[in-house]
Image (tube, rainbow over all chains, first blue to last red; front, side):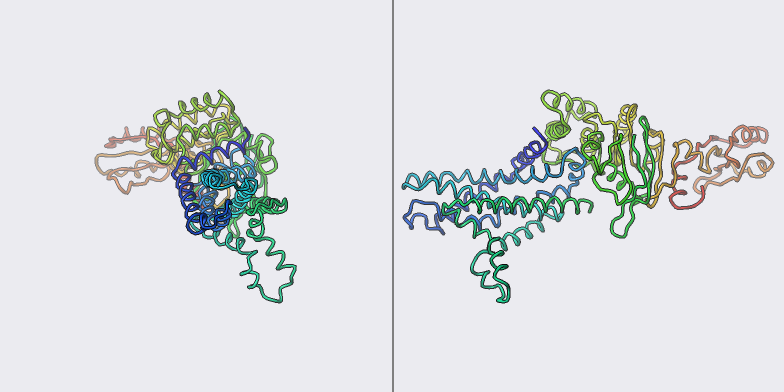
Length: 244
Length: 309
């Protein structure tokens, strides 16, 4: 096992060593239930799909994912363990990726544990399971996008609460960037190219089509590049801020 | 061998390390001294590759810490200031993690971990969460982590801070045993520690080296080196008797204790024989009589405050 794997394992284990992972999973599942059945009108719609379930995910992630991401680097700096980690023979990329993938795996586990909802819809009707699988993958990639922003914000401060607030704010901007509300808010003199570019950065633009079962490689690529860019930024921020 | 050449580290306007150069050879235990904020910890952070230098270079056995960080870091065992460790893990889990990162696999992991647990006496707390350990135990966990891979270079930032006298003694013994074929650099402000374990002492102040020598030579720079302290039962004018004696310098009266005097050596040479002969011939009312080796503390204060020794 290389250092990436060792760090990944340590981080994932530490989520489960404290109540954090359990609280996250339980609240994630309860919120999903409320959103899907009460607010989403799962039964009322009378359709055998999970669209109400998936369409709430961006808003659910907006608060839940930054909560996991906020400690990623802020705690390392606060307790001084960053000095230990960075003086071990470990590449910075292994540390950044190991931590990110551990947090991403946790959101993956939480997402997998929503399987009863999939069983329910299969029991009640005859849904297109290909669409559901696609939506699950899209949702997980979007969670990764939120986490990557969180990783960078957590690297920027010793205070995990500040990291949380910054992450929520930036994630919110990216969620609404593709939505009509924001498009109307842009001043008219802004060239169309920029408006298009900004709305193409929006999470909803990419997620909505995936959630409906359209797995366009460009949408997946968007999230992959988005994650890579924010993780690269995390590494730079860590390098700059570690001395403080 | 560690080569530190023209090393500087600046933070914005503040210069923490100012053009530092020195080498450390195998078998040396280097005590790194200096007042708070003198740049001790910063120097250690640069040597271990945590911070990158503003200018200058650090090479460890030929590996430059900025150009070949992984190779250089493999050779170093480091106890950072405050001995940070992952508090949510047990001692055993944490040391297992370190062993894996240090490249041990399979049975070697358990073997190495048990070895260091035995070495720094952590057996009783190996299944305890690190956050719940006392300060002394946590420091020992940090020490265990640093010596795990039997490193060629051991860098310890205040290794005995917060330990009780027994633990201090144990850690010093450990460092002495480890030191034979290694390079050890320890920073401390406990000066007795330097006399106890170090073969060389560097005192830095405001990022510059102000003294670099063996602890014994540093002590010799003290004005109390070879001084003779005497305590009398009643008042007596020592200075009058001593004015004729060659090599004897000033006589200082102790501010706190009555009838106690320190007779300084005028030229840094032993004056014990001369003083004891006078004391016998003049029949001084002496109750205590001893020779001082010189006080490191005294030298430390003088060189870091820019005065004369």
